[in-house]
Every structure is written in C-alpha cells, then in structure tokens.
Amino acid sequence: MDVEFFNECWTDLYYFLHYKHEEKLTHQNVRCMQAVKKKTKASVADLAKVLGVTHHSASEHVKRLMEKGYLQKERSPIDKRTVYVKLTETGEEVLKRNSELDDQKLKIVLDHLSEEEQLSAMAVFKKLREEARNVYGR
Image (cartoon, rainbow, N blue to C red; front, side, top):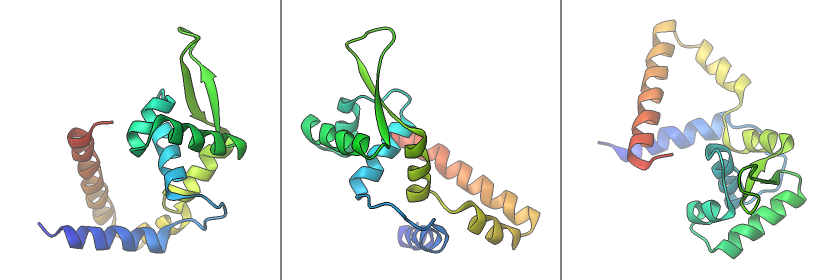
C-alpha cells in the first residue's frame, strides 16, 4: 500500500480545490468546529478529548469561537446541567470554507470526467469514508 501516494493526491486535491480562506483561524479552531459538526451533541469535555487538550484549553477554544460568532452553547432540554456546543449559521459557513473543497472548482474538475469515472470516484470515496468510520468511529 502506497500511503505516500494517497497523501500526495489528497493534499494536491485540497491545495487546488479549496475555498479562499477569509478568516484567521488556527488549525485547532477548525478541528474544534469540525468536531462540533460531526458530533451531534458536543460538550466541552468531548472537544477536549477530540483535540487532545485539557478541558480548560477546549473551553478557551470554545470561548474564542463564541466571541467570533461561530459557536454557541445550548442547555440540554432533558438535563439543564448539561451544556452542548453547536455551530451558528455563520460558523457553518466558516467551517465549510475552511475544511471543504470549493463546490464550483470541484464541479469543473468532475465535469472533465466521464459519467463512469465520476461514479467510480464516488464509490472509492464512499468506501474510504465507510472504512474510516468503521476503524475510528464517529
């Protein structure tokens, strides 16, 4: 298995097809926001675990992202002591620009492929995603 080949292809795809980054965010900021999006109900403790930092550090990340208007806290309707972190609408947009491929650029590239090639690429990406979820969970 040529892991270097996969990594080179992946980084080339992101390099050529990413959105223009307009916000000043750290890698940890983006990872924090990704964790909030991927985890249905994310607590600060959950974020600390995902980021590999202390609860205090995760709380500081959340605080800064809340100040920018990207995150908000929400109390659990079941247990008012439990607080979850969620993305705001602005946070959703910012995360998209800082972690996804540009829809328009990707469409242009995909339009250069035959329908069969597009379906093949989709099948490979789907399988890789499934295996990543199986190995590392959600």
